[in-house]
Image: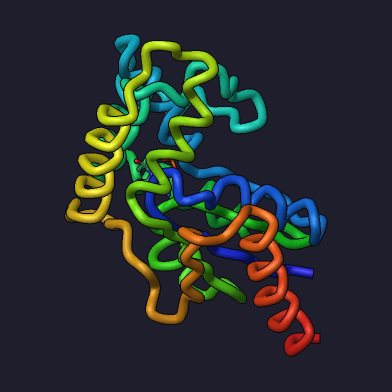
Length: 205
Ligand code: DC
């Protein structure tokens, strides 16, 4: 079976956790496309040319450790506005989306550019305050000096850059289901997403 779930949304909206949970629930493969941009961002920070970094990319071997820092987030967002970088990643993502057994991809342009014909698209969002709080809970354990104020500034700047860039900006696809998780627990958000996807699966079988 080929079935693509396209998930987009701003930083720290919960889309990563929800995507992973959905992929486990349905037994679909999962591609965190933000991780790819983060990998390239980290490489660029250590002196590589972004296209050289893409040539070295092996998704299954990406080490998540060190990729969630503010510096990497910022550089990932910066290199993501380069059309040459985006173009070099399109085919890999599309091929992944057509995997037999179903695929979940999350990012910023999945429903709009990478998989415009996905069987279902979700746009996951939450208020800025909630997103900054969630990111804080996630990072504060390891970074004792972390300030929520600096996280809010970073999230706001990154959202703006991702939404306003010329190439493949973050945008809700017209046919995407909007999931606002501001007042929802992760379990409740996952349940809503699972319901929406199950409905489409039922209709298509
Ligand atoms: O989802 P994330 O926060 O890990 O993504 C990091 C950055 O990568 C994000 O700020 C913008 C970029 N990105 C993108 O432009 N397109 C994608 N499909 C995924 C991520």
